[in-house]
Amino acid sequence: MSAPTNEQRLARLEAAEAIRDLKARYAALADAKYRPDYTRLADDTMRDVAWEQALCFTEDALWEGGRGFGESLVGRSQLHDWFQRSPWCFAVHYYGSPQLKIDGDRAQGVWRLWQLALREDNRDAVLLAATTHEGYRRETDGAWRCSHMRFAGIHMTSLGQGPMPLVATLAALDARDRRPGAAR
Image (tube, rainbow, N blue to C red; front, side):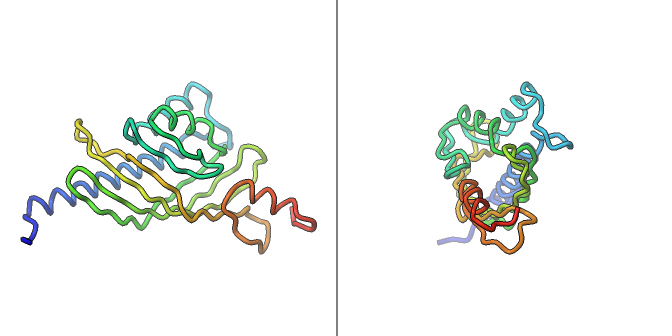
């Protein structure tokens, strides 16, 4: 097997940088749906921002968010709907430690996620950690888009609740907080 050419190495570096830019755009749009007073944007503006967020994905993208995070969704239209109704009224996403493997016009990635969010249903501040496993595709317009996103190892907790165990879903967080003697 011969060593990659300089052109091949450069193409991989450019692809990796384009995917990092895509992820930064996705996170910024995910956070742009909320006002500084911890309320959602007006419906028409929310639709527009959620559509821009959905455009980070291929038309046939698969989203595997799991229970409470969109379940399994297929396609940009379903993602757009989910991005408009996610459980937050405020969020800040921090993706880091990317592990990217580029293979021509396709790529795989693993990201670590820290997210601070405010639940819309009860205004509870939540700290969430997860890993996302993603597939990417360079489309005919030359843009890289996410073709598959799967959340794994979700851990979350309410902030200010004292020493409590982490849980994997919002429903488990609610059940934990309803325990007799649970601090609130």
